[in-house]
Amino acid sequence: MKANFIAQLALAAVASPVCRALLHLRPRALLPPKRHHAVLGPEAATRRPNLPRRALQPSSPEDVAKALSIVITNACSFAIKGGGHSREVNDSNAPGGVTIDTVRMRKVVPDMDDKTIVTLGAGHNLGSTLTALSSLNLSFPVGRVSSIGLGGFLLGGGQGDLGGKLGFAMDNVLEYEIVLANGTITTACPTTNADLYWALRGGGGNNFGIVTAFTLRAVPETPIWAATTRFPDNQTAAVTEELDNLVTASGADPNVNFYTDYRIAPATGEFVYTVQQRYLNATVAPAAYDGLNAVPYLSRTGNLTSPNFASDVAYGVRHIFVSLSWHSSPAMLQRAASIFKTEALKVQNVSGLTAGMDSQPITLSALRIAQERSGNAFGLSSDKAILENLITIAWANAADDAAMYAFADAWLAQTEAASRELGVFVPYRYMNHAFRSRQDVLGSYGEENLARLRSVQRAVDPKGVFTSKGLCTGYWKLL
Image (cartoon, rainbow, N blue to C red):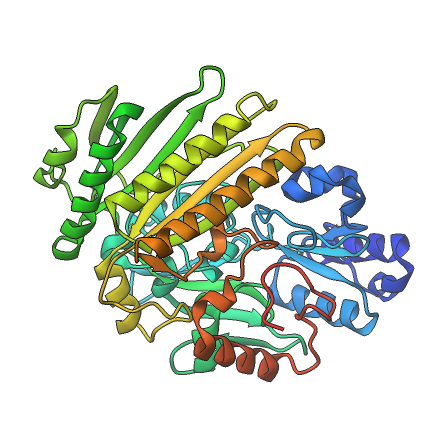
């Protein structure tokens, strides 16, 4: 494997004179952009001139340290790729530079003493994470899309079906293994590099170094109740009332969790409200959902199942995510849905259109868990539940870019204004769902937390390699 890694670096050096020093290492996965672009993410495929010269696939933290030393010494721009779902230039690849792709770093190391603790390499995606955990009869609060990279998911916070009981995914990370800009391979946990440990819990993956492994606190894999109910658009008001009741119920019963999707069918212009109902134990048809189940619906399925499931979603190569949060309110959710409907109908005939508005609660129990486990960078109080909301928009052709960006901008501006008007506005923006060119995620954490994050960044990266003026300029930057 070492010889293969060095061969990759040699290939990168030949193609990129500024990185010629890479020739002295032996790599394996330096792939030319055409051969590799399918795993570089949407922005690479959409904007071909932004492909990296080469993509490097290290298999160990030592490989990462060597490659990092060489690209920094030679002032070569680089990017870090996990799952490749980041949507903007420089996030998952470095135009004309080197992409450090973590895909070969997929170790699975159970703890010898505590069977609920496991260390996973940063190259896993959520699908391979679930496969690894299921083989150990364990579960973890991962997200719902299997191709999402584990690294970006955890470093942005991480929300999933088990969040009511276990909190954010990052609140279940016991230790990070990370390669710093100076080539040091170190760890961060509550007792070692505690400030860095705090900063990595929501401070983003491209600010402090390259994380190569995560040690997780998992739980035994036990069945949960999972149901999917589709409601007609004329029941939206009733559905939002019941969702608010569920948010309230989740404060007393952390087994209650849900995820919703309000979506247009472009061919007909009709909208359907889908609710993914979760109850985090083996209770069949839990009473907590009686109110929602009484609302007239189009279809319903439900069964006991493992919590270890995720599906893949084909977003296409042109897509936008936008994140907004507010305190749960039926009136606010109805306003957001109405704005979404109005704007979606304006672009109904755009080729390849898919568009949905999704919502999920950040429950009181999740907020309390964050406080109990060393805190995190988000700056969220634990006194009132929050609804985190996302619109996803995808389309086929460059000719429609302006219209689709206008769609996103209109929903963002009008919905935020409505949340302020109704007194439910929450500044927090979920990094994994936000629109980097439009939203200030790190600023939404509050001035005190932002200042602390910047202090940690300067301490571990004094030369500014992982800043907006450095060599790794993509994703959400502190400086």
